[in-house]
Length: 51
Image (tube, rainbow, N blue to C red):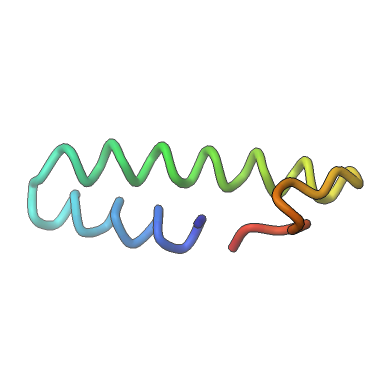
């Protein structure tokens, strides 16, 4: 999820498409939150990390 968010951020920046930029930011933030929760011992959706 984090990698997809970074790819969308780059694509949105390079292609000047703001919706890709927005979706990329959302995916990166959600991925980081889920990764932090997983590292604290709370597996979300059966996974401890969301790359």
